[in-house]
Image 1 (cartoon, rainbow, N blue to C red):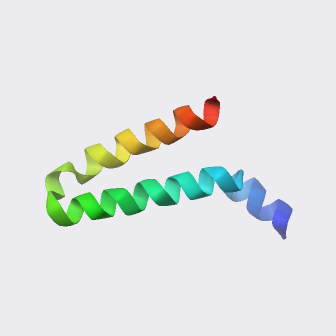
Image 2 (cartoon, rainbow, N blue to C red):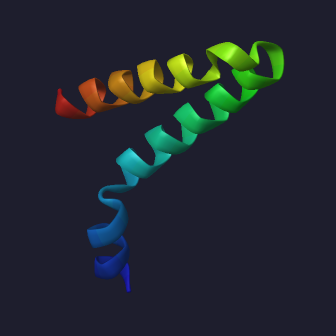
Length: 53
């Protein structure tokens, strides 16, 4: 089962960073709904860049 989840979701660090980005974007959406999409895209790019290091 662990191998199947890794195949679908990738590394646990990726899942955690995407979840953190989603939670941050949700928080932004409560304050500034129009900016949530841009913030999510930016946070996902940062998370991907950090994974590449």
